[in-house]
Length: 266
Image 1 (cartoon, rainbow, N blue to C red):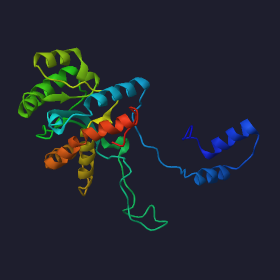
Image 2: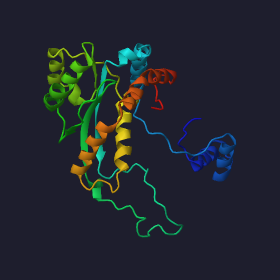
Image 3: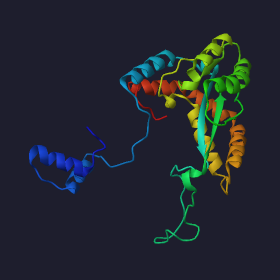
Image 4: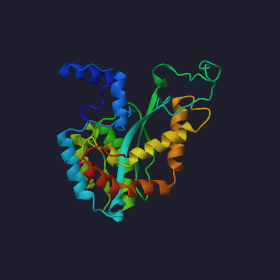
C-alpha cells in the first residue's frame, strides 16, 4: 500500500480528484478494515537512505556468520541522555471516568523536562565498563582523554588480545585526534554502518536502565539522584542479560538482510 500515513480524508479527496467518485471518509475506513488494515502508531526509526541500506547490507553480510566466540571479543559502546522526567508514554494512572483532574491523578512536570544526564558505557559478554557521566558537550579530545584512555583501553585489555571496539560514527568518535590515538594505541576498531542503532545491543541496555529507574518510587528528585540510580542499576543488571543481548547479534544481521538493509524489530 502506497503512502500508509495518509488519512481516510486524504484518500477520499484524492479519489474524488482522480475519478470524480464521491465517498465518505467512513467508507474509506470500512474498506481498509475489510483488508485487515487498521490505523496504528508507526514505529519510530532513523532515516535510512539507499546508501545507508547498502552499507548495512554489506556489514551484515560480513558478520552474519560470526560465532558467539567472535562476538564475545567486541566491546559495544555508546552515549545516551536520560531525562529527569521522561515522556515515554509508559506511565499510567488508576482513576474513574470523569476524574482526570482528581488529586493524585495529574502527572506534574517541570518546564523543559527538568534537565537531563548524559552517560557513556560499554558492554561485552565478559564485562561492563563503569557508567561514565559526560558533563557538557563531548568533543573528540574529551572522548580520547576521558573515555578511550581511562575506560576503553583497560576494558579491551581485560577482554583479551583480539578485543574489538565498537563505537558509532558520531563526530567526536571520528575526529582526527581520536583516529590518531586509535592507531597509536593499536586499538582494533570495528567499522560501523551509519544510522544503525538497531544493530547495537547496548541500545537495549539503555531501555533496561530506563525501566529499572522508573520502578523507583518516588521518582528521582534531582539530576544527582538520577545519576546515582543509573550507576546503581547499571551495575545491578545481571551478566546473563548482557550475554543475551550480544548473543542476538546474528539474528540482528539475519533480520537486517531479510529487510534488504532496512529497519529491524530491534
